Length: 108
Length: 114
Image 1 (cartoon, rainbow over the protein chains, first blue to last red):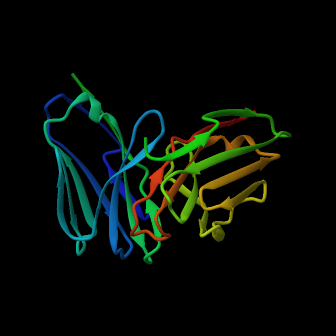
Image 2: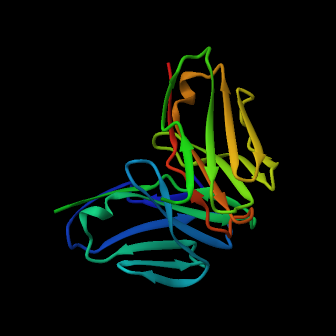
């Protein structure tokens, strides 16, 4: 069992739908990253958060440290949001542990 | 464009070949990383360099040999690889070493070992 679990593994949606991707972890952490990986392979950082909630455009990330859980929400999804979304937790200050990712496809 | 470039983008090599992957960052960062991404597996950290010194080596086989000649460049030298080494190899950099700092990733090198 991975220390960082994401669900669902695969997700399809129609354009405009509200999307939620979940990340659960079993270790004590100090922060959590959400990353986006497009089909070409490159990865970009979306958020880093250690408590509460952050919003950037149509993306919202929340974290509950006590429950060891984070969610990434996408409002008004669009085909260009199709990507793999990866959760990574900050463990022991300097180590990152990655989830296996959630593959999202948004259809027009 | 993240400011981190990798070459080549694709590489096919035989098990007896020797090749090198190159990573360059134009961000003035002091830490650089090599990751391996295999299908359906989480990213695996291979090596970490901080201020050109290797600070982490996560039990990577000796057929992978990193080199960091300066803070802008990172190489991964490959020799006598195995088919199971086929994967996407990603380079990343951050301002300083540590999980609290945003990492900027390159586009990756897709490696196929035949």
